[in-house]
Amino acid sequence: MTSIDVHELTKEYGTRRAVDHLTFRVHPGRVTGFLGPNGAGKSTTMRLLLGLARPTAGSATLGGRPYATLREPLRHVGALLDAEAAHGSRTGRDHLRALATSNRIPSRRVDEVLAETGIDSVARHRVKTYSLGMRQRLGIAAALLGDPEVVVLDEPSNGLDPEGIVWIRGLLRRLAGEGRTVLVSSHLMNETASYADHLVVLGRGRLLVDTPMREFIDARVRPVVRIRTTDAPALRKLLAQHGHDGVEHEDGHWTVEHARVDDIGRLVSTAGVPILELATQEGTLEQAYLDLTGTEAEFTAQPQEA
Ligand SMILES: Nc1ncnc2c1ncn2[C@@H]1O[C@H](COP(=O)(O)OP(=O)(O)OP(=O)(O)O)[C@@H](O)[C@H]1O
Image 1 (cartoon, rainbow, N blue to C red):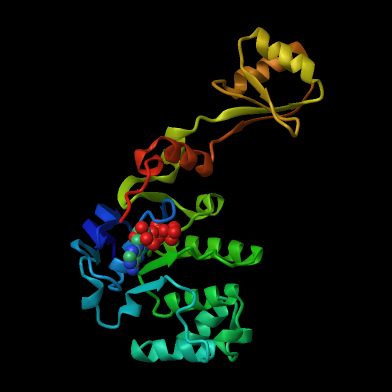
Image 2 (cartoon, protein in one colour):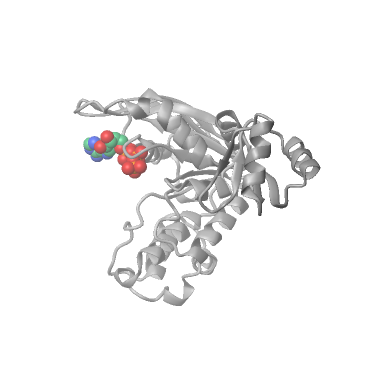
């Protein structure tokens, strides 16, 4: 199985260090979300991995090999970096056929990926007539063309409609389920939470987090007890009497930190407070990410000027 190995990877543009001694491994069989604020170095890392830029130091390899040494690379790694990459005057189909030919990929794969990405009805139209979402789907079709073991996608949900967003989620899960190595960058936390198993987070070119997603959330956000009642005054009084810090939210629901749902349930039922909803509310990736960005110097310090 093919993993992605990034080792002491460094890339400088003039005096600006875009990637700074970065080391991590992306394992097969799971979706790894690649996160970090604008300018953190995600795209640069992907470009270095795909041989589109040369590292200043260190290495980025696929199954132990640099991209440049792969013969017919699309059969090993499929990537979406820039949805504008296809030539506007070509049809989507011709774009894929050219890629297939140059990588000795059977032409039936063109029809398969067109169907899989839902653009077969526009396959004979020129790419310049495509919407952003269609271009994005064409880029994903190109990434899947060679049936690669490694898939690298830079913000794949960009421009997709709601149906497309649900589709990409299923696609990423399926690719990981088939044992492929899947690295996906995104700024959309809810989206990432819906498909990622593991996270790699960068800040100013450095590695901040390399951990399973659930562990990242659990380490940073405690679950809270969520309650809805028809008798807010009674609930407020009861929680205060028992030393709980209940917070009433605008839409009428309450949350209680540092409490167990069983204890709160027992309390409200014994006191006869009418309850419409009582549940444990798990922390979200967005909360955990914002907690990280609020505490890490890599996020809070001013970037160095070039
Ligand atoms: N070709 C280039 N020449 C000069 N500087 C560059 C080049 N490419 C990237 N940079 C700089 O490297 C840093 C990292 O940029 P990069 O695009 O990798 O970040 P990113 O995490 O992908 O950001 P975003 O989320 O905005 O896409 C930025 O400071 C950027 O300005």
